[in-house]
Length: 522
Image (cartoon, rainbow, N blue to C red):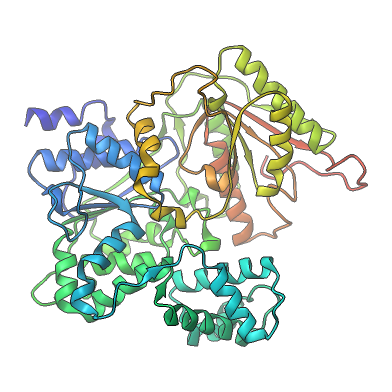
């Protein structure tokens, strides 16, 4: 028991309350920098150390490979073995995985019991299948890659939103939703249908089919469902504000959504963790609705805890983050953060003449920080869209600075990356990164879209393009699109630990008559 108490050391009062409520539904609203992963991993370790939970029946799911790797690393540090076999296997460790990798293991474990056909091949790049489907429906062989991209995004959105081909037109009418690429709803539905046929004829499944197939098995194959369900005694769902209707459906089936089923009562040992203010994936089907309404679905709750102490950012950064959210019409849904740190550097705001001058100015500031002893990898340049990144890469290259780029592509599909690719993430999470502090070994400045920076933190953050048209992107009217942009601004700001530098350029290249205006969020 002494070992179990040691696990709780260093947690604040609210974190400790979350970590020691081990049974029944628990909701943790965790603001930026509030020690969310620390709290969740201590909770799992404490429950296993006290004997309240059996490690082999513990499943923690999150959204990115990096987050899952960090969770596994922290659990290992806390003395918990990692599951080798995963769900449905006989391994005695805790399973911390992405939704998709957990579901893929489940699918593998029961496939031979539910299907005589060989296990389907997972498509790594759906674009070829989408292009073939478009060609078949439009009878055009010259397919625009941008159209393929947009149609693919719409197919993925429909699937994670649980919209079947035959329901697509009706949903579009009801929700006033327009298909992409100027397509009529009936024509898009035909492309969607052809995509599914093409995939099936090849014996292939896509990323979202993994979850859909497990849902189908849980619904229609009681023995396989019981096998999967019996392997999950305690479920933790991280980043719950990002769950899609499909992920929510799978999660409730894991718990036994249909109530009494073959003598198996609904499992209420679920802990969800998230932050409505960090919902930035609505375009991909995510919604904070399930997090906000968790008590209505799973109540009465064993614990409902807000973690609003930000241990990451200075009071200056936190004050700006709170100010951005203060104007939101649904402000009551969002936590007001309180910084636990001493006052830090003033937030800088700079206006440049052109994009190139902005990039050079940011590069010069980063050079000054490096001369003061800051590592390049402690600095990040955050952009709203991928297209803003090239000019900043050029400026850093000209300054002789190494950099790495994180784009908006495949935020979901990265969840099935080979675990070997996570060794660096695991080492970083355990504080064992052997690269040293020499600049030669430093991975360099990060240039990232705000979307791709979620879950990361940097000592010094440069948020560029803080003007109307870029942040918020386009010219959104009041409503959902504008609020998504507001939350994106909040996520960008809260990546900063020690200093935050905001900037924009009045024009793209100095020749445009149109002058940019500062972002309404600031």
